[in-house]
Length: 175
Image 1 (cartoon, rainbow, N blue to C red):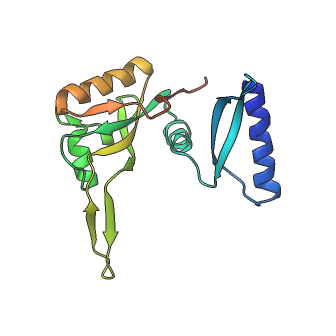
Image 2: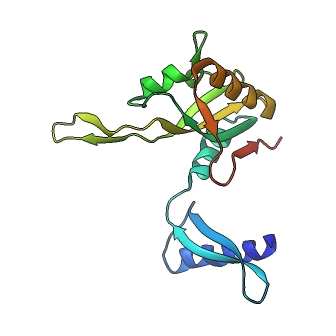
C-alpha cells in the first residue's frame, strides 16, 4: 500500500510542478477504499496548494526549534481564547510560561488559534467569533518529556488535549 501511495504522490507532485507550476509543500487529501472487486487501493481526492498544519509543525519543531522531539495536538480551554495573552495564561504553571521557554525545558507553541478576528478600516482588530481551542506544538527532550508537559498543563489549568483527526503528529529529530 505504501509503495502505491508513494507512486500516486509522485504523480501528483509531477502534475503540480508540470501543469500547475506549483512548487513546495502542499496538502494531498486521499482515502484508502475497498473496491467492488475486493481490492484495497488509495484514491487521491484533492490537492491543496498550501502546506498542511503538519508541515508547519515540522518547520517549527524540527527546522526552527531543532527540538529533539515534538508532538502536535489540539488544546481545549475552559474559556475562549481572545488573544495570545489568553493563550499564555493557560500555558503558565508556577510562574513558568511554557510559551516562552525552550525545548530543553519543554515549550508550547501556538500553531493556530481558532478564534476569528476582524480588522476594520482604522486598523482596529476585534474577535468576532470566539473559540476555546488551538492547535499547539509541544517540544521537549523526548516523547516522555512532551507527555509530562501535556499532563502538567492539563492538571494545572483545566485544559484538555486531543489528537488531531488522524492521530497526533509526533516527530523525533534524527541524530
